[in-house]
Image (tube, rainbow, N blue to C red; front, side, top):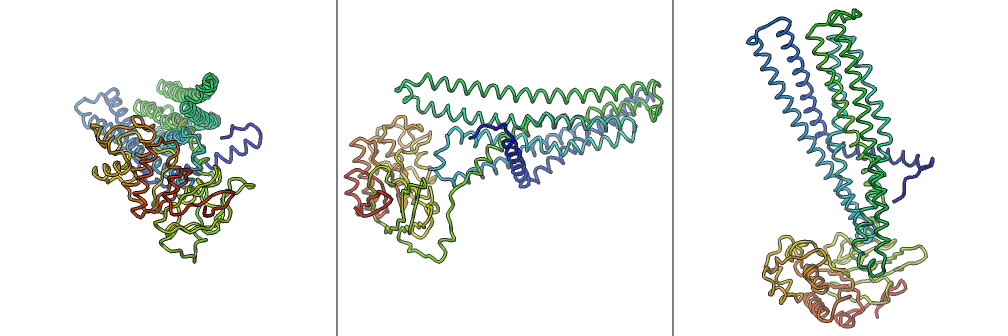
Length: 570
């Protein structure tokens, strides 16, 4: 991720990026327009109830103090005041509830887009990004959109509607006081925009910095053993300290801007209210005779004073939530940068008119290169029949894993086409076992139900026994509900690998792809894995695996040598 640039080109690029982020946020808003309008409607009801509340309160005080009306005769006004307060509370409650629902829908939509992009990118390319950065994008960056859609966006409309209603009423009561409000109102948005210009850039730097910091910290923790072996822990700790200090300084700058904006806006709102209070006070005392000042009464003067803070309140709330806009712009820039990364895509048009048999895997003139001067696979044509057991062998870096990734749909070729039993890679259901098994925190059963959620306890136990974990299963008092961590805590490396392999037996896949299934295993684990694969072969499954292991080569009915961009029978 590039550092923010300070030159003219960087400013132009930044302005272009900000425009793109605003368009993306508006696109998310258009998809949830109903929830936003409902939030604004509830806020408007609360605003009208507030105006009615202040009107009744000023009327009660005027009648009680000036006209000396008995309290008993003011009962209807008191009841109306209580009703207005209740309606205001209900409106504010619905506003908060609808805003939260709107934000929930938007964040769900944003995560759906990120997930779709991750799927299109594939696990191979996605693996080039730090897990910490991906987690930040999925969790913190998306959560940063909450304030923008739940608070700032609805408040933009309310900051116009409610003050306009109050302004109309104030002009009706006293046009000179209305002019004071009208002249002071633009000061708040003006200074809010001036302060916000720096806030957006700071928030983007904030998100960039924490993304790098989280990724580096996670990488250092994962590689702690290696760092200790090579005596590099002190250097790694110093790097994390410097990055953390940089993050602290960016955070403090962001907070300073937020506090500055609130202080400036509170100052101008307070000054404007004070000016109106002075005008009304001198008008009631008879010191001001210009315009409608001599017509002021306790009712009109008090109502204007009560409405003045409410006139500025929506604008003040908007200014408080302006930081939410800056945070959303910063987070949106990071998310949009991820979504704009180019991804490989399947080209269905190339398949038009070409019908393959439903019982073969076909590669037609497939080429794949990671550098312009080095093609890993060159013009490869290959046919594999259903039920074949194919072993891929050859030197390291020869393209075995690349070929498996192409078949799995984790990446697509530069040219050529691939079909798996008549379907495109990535759309065909298959079993996969990489060089390192994948486990999640939970139980054995949880891990096997990742691919088959409705698998029965009996099916899970049978699958575990098929991969040679029967004795271990019998020795655990919790059975299939024995705990296991992401790192396979409580299991040896070979047992963890076999636990991942057991998913394939539960899911009952027709096609199974394995990348070095016995790499790094002890001899006992190798035997169990070999026997498990033999059972799958006997069951008529199509197995394609890369290996250097002689026993696995004897299991295959066809051995392919992958080397120098070519694939040929060994």
